[in-house]
Length: 316
Image 1: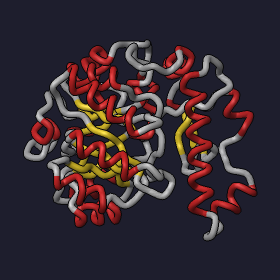
Image 2 (image 1 turned 90 degrees about the horizontal axis):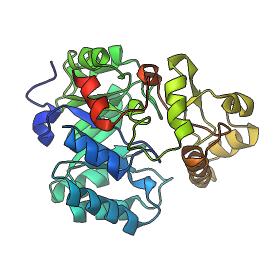
Image 3 (image 1 turned 180 degrees about the vertical axis):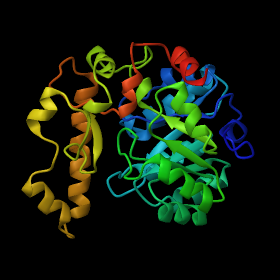
Image 4 (image 1 turned 90 degrees about the vertical axis):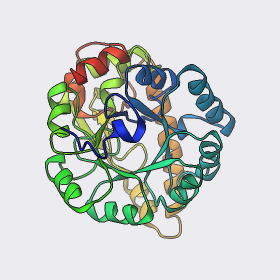
């Protein structure tokens, strides 16, 4: 069983201790709304919206249609020039929680706590988990090497016990869950909840292309590989023929610029933006000559289903 005292079910007043993980250009308001109806919560990357007004409109749209908690994922490093504006909108709209990724959450924690918003921080090791705990994080999201997208380097079998032993705040496990058996196995380790993403890509409520959804059905765990082509940070993608053709590593010039102290910040931002555009094309294009992010849990995706049915299969 999950950590009952600090369970997500108690922290967020939800039926099941599940966060539908924020997925760039995949997560949308329809998915969040149906997730809340099914008894879980979810988060959307702020970067899914081009303007502050679009982000605010999305938050308000969810609030008008369902009464339940949901969050926004903020990238808080130099690659996201908009994050403080995005943070202000989250605070003004008083969402339930913020998930921070790829940077220091200190400012986010200070600002969000002033208006009663919880902050969950992505971590990939114990050292960073202790840092964000000292900064006042409400929970850590343990991104393990079984996760999709920007995965960690440590298996959940090692990472979760270390975090549970070291941290006093709730631990949420992210990665490696695509079935009820895997869901229960990780809860039995004693975590407060889980974050699940890839199995929701092939949902009826997702707006990605039919080809992207079908790829999640047709490909499996063995077809997931790491690539740095998209954002400069290792990211799991489906190894389609196109991906095999273009390769998965940055070229010499990209690596050189990325290491240069003077240009590093700006190059990372440029690479991130270019990666965003590539992912946007991949998400909505009707061709396999694209790059589709997913994790090994697509091994359990056998059909395109509703969010309600996916949640039911995970929890029962």
